[in-house]
Length: 497
Image (cartoon, rainbow, N blue to C red; front, side, top):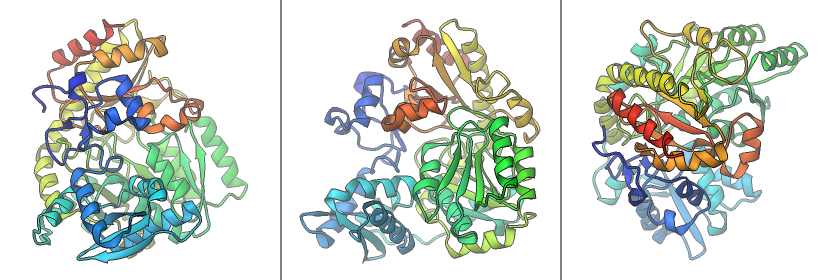
């Protein structure tokens, strides 16, 4: 837990936490976030790190330059990947986006580089961001230092066993990934391989890159049902009964950032009747809070979040339901085309961070619940998005739908989102005055806030609002601080508007 929150203008760009491998960086003001999205050098030059799929870590940038000096000319750049398969997928993504065979894979020592014309750097960055399969900062650092490749898989094996124990399945039905999105991309790839040519279905408004993977990665498209409420569930049922075919249905439990809880029971029954795999992202609640595997055919999650808590390493997990009718073909497809695994040095850090996962999760969930109660009493607050029956999204029943899959003594997750009254005028002042860590990521041991829609959907804000996600939304992940300190922090920010 950070001793001094990074929230002041002079903290711009500082890593959160104080580590060269931090997965967040301080964006302390509303304007800083907008300037970051617009590529303002004032902000860009301050960022030495950031969320690894969005901001190339400095070790990765140095490795790109080192490799590039040998593999590229003056009009080319390169990105480095840990496996040949990941590099080939990234090159394929670029070539599909620009409709030309411009990117190619070249081996470099034990690594694999994707070389592409500089004019297509954005398409390459999109591949890195959406699929999350790029080299990790620790692997890049070790390669730059000339250290031998660490093949010790002991820590990763122990993490895999922990995930299997939490999900209550044999280890052969679990997979580890370099990050949550590389795990998600692998699940999507597996379902496409099992049902080639069929589109996917996204039920409810999801995390930005989940939808991008379904829409942009692979050969099929995605039918997007943004509200994920009863009306859209009826719409989905009618379409399936009319003969719609799909490779699978994807949903979040709860959703990010609106914390909506889908009717997983009915969705699961519908998928079963129509022989569709159901994929559930349990990242926000966490395996320590919910057991959604009894409804899903496969679940996935980001271990970067609550499982780690520290915010200095990425990781992801996939769990296939061994009782699913799709268990055998899904496992075979995942083994045939797995995600990049955890780099050994990352696994050591992640295992150490996760030792007290269950204990930390209980505190962060309790703090989130207390903060939600506090904020709902404040007259300046228009709405709080949280997985209970006061959530303003869709239909009622979020709490009962959540409780149907909650483990004994479970919390509702550490996450909630805030919308203020007169939001266009009040939100910037509130955010600027909020004395907690400010940057992307969630599930951390320290409370963390970000203007989620600005960071995730800046170039499609009108579309996001049409889906019910305000551009003025602030997402908060509660940490381990004493609740009195957190209430004082939010009271101070509210007092500034």
